Every structure is written in structure tokens, then in C-alpha cells.
Length: 112
Image (cartoon, rainbow, N blue to C red; front, top):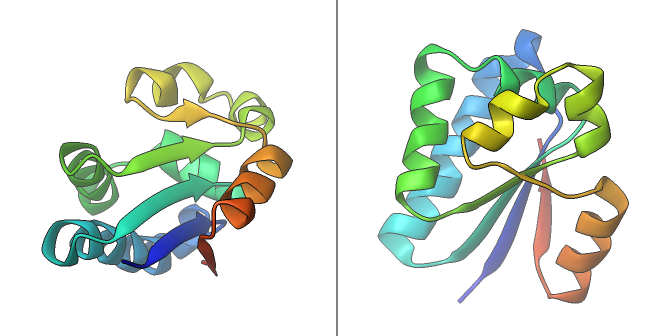
């Protein structure tokens, strides 16, 4: 089983790029039973916090497929979306801690 972590830095201006990878993450977990996590950092946190349309649907699908989704709490505060994200089930984990944890746990990091 592969261990894949999608590190989403693509913000609202690159929503299509982020969306393609969110859908891929969901499908890898659902259809191929891979170990997948998604982490939002920088502008990606803004995208997740103001998600609408297909991006919001992709986030809901990730949740329904039990994909772990986390975000940087400093960025969530910066973009004023911490409450929205936590209400959607997004975990807050500092970026440095998340990156080190993912690497130590053997995940391949896919930057988007």
C-alpha cells in the first residue's frame, strides 16, 4: 500500500489545480485503498476555508471517504478561516510538525 500526502498550497486563483489533486486523493483512497492524507498550507488554506462548488464537494467527499485532512493553524488564523475549517472536520496541525510527521511515517509528499 502506498502512503501519499497531498500538500496543497494552490490558492483560490489555482482552484482547478487543487481540485484535480483533491479528487485524485479521494479516488486513490476509495478505489485503490491507499493510505492518503491531505494538508492545506499557505494559500491552500484560504481555498479550503472559502471552498464552494466543486472544491467544497471534493472536500465533502474526502470526509466521507475518511481521508485525513489537516491545515496550518497559523494560515487558518491569517485567512480568518479557522472556525469554518474546524467545523468541517479539518484538523489543525502546524506545518513543520505535519511535514516531519508525514516523512517519518513514510508518506510520499505530493506538492500542489
